[in-house]
Amino acid sequence: MAGFSSKSFVLTSLLGLLALLLCGISEAQTNQDCCLSYTKLRLPRWVLKGYTEQLSSEVCDIPAIIFHTYGGLNACVNPKDAWVKKHLLFLSYKLKKMST
Image (cartoon, rainbow, N blue to C red):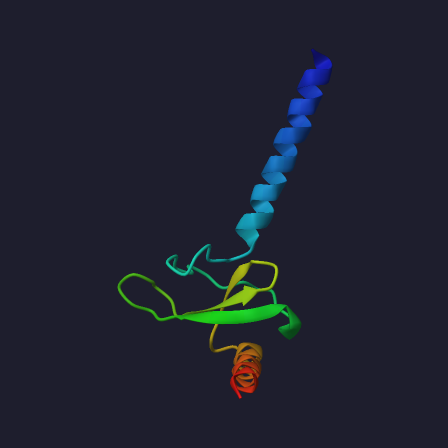
């Protein structure tokens, strides 16, 4: 019985840690979800596949840029941050280059 309790405790602890890690990153699961806060992480340009703009409206409380990564993550970032503006220019240039 003691072995089962230890395994249950370890599994519960790992699941709790995973939940805390996932809650620490502000991300939108789909384009329909609203960003409620901004992530504190500065994403490197090379991981970015694209982005979606979220406007503050009756549905979503804050304006945000949702960066889409090659790894499948969607990160909510503040559109007023200088690094975000630079990344948007990079993605726009990349798109323009692909279309010519």
